[in-house]
Length: 384
Image 1 (cartoon, helix red, strand yellow):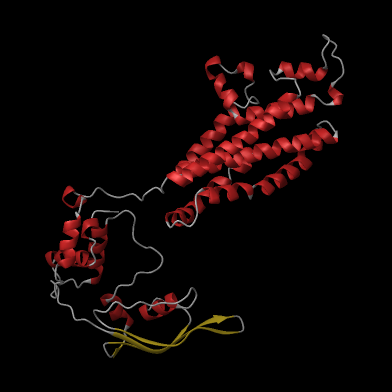
Image 2 (cartoon, one colour):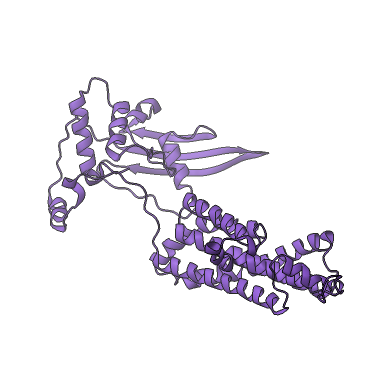
């Protein structure tokens, strides 16, 4: 049951980006997200406990009484709820899969070692015994042991002393024999589950997502004051560029796009027409699935399958893909930027591939500087 709870860790990590986005936009408080996440796992824990108990209890040969069986099932339910809360808490604090996996694996090791099963309480060193009392599994083990050895079949008198066989077995392993220890164990496990989920709520409310790795930005460009930003916005845009450039327009008329599906052709674009003028920012707006990305892929020449119909021209000339690919840039939905190079290095690499070999190194660097300043990336030139 403890290892089954480990699956909550990657699930929680994958949900955090959406939660942080909704939280920052004031969609709901943290508890409105953490409490349902906890409650929705209760039926899951119940199913896990029922299945595990039905498979294991009578196979191992535990006491056959119905009361002992359902008490055993309730302990497993409590252990599973505690484990889900523990790993959900670690994920909400770590906020990173690698960090969470590291501490999650270490937590399993410590909890199992100090749970009283691998090392009985009497064998744990005095300076480390506090870990036994903090380990949630130690309470689970005592609850299961008391539930089993308090059953009727263990109530026979021992040949040695005046105690029952069950009492002697429990004391031989340093476990309590009083029946109330069962309820102490179950209550402690549920209390741990509540505490862990409460910490999850606090972490979601006050911790921010971990930022992406960035290279050190030089001191000269580390801080840009408001006055500098206003001066930049008021500067007139330079008309000339270091490299000669002729603005081009793109027109497309009656563009259709078909893909093959079993039995017929499916039409994804139907008689789409439009124009992109130089110096004009054009927005392509539509609902999800309307075909915006498909249209851009077709115009950019990125579609390698299917059938394309229609007239696409660059400044009145039919589009030649080999030429168009050298004079245009296309930012796809999928990020293909290498995470190991900076913004400036990425632009320099692209300029080496796109610009003619006759362009000197100095002109290429100057052109990259102009492009970065034009799109206001010059302050992030050294960022990864």
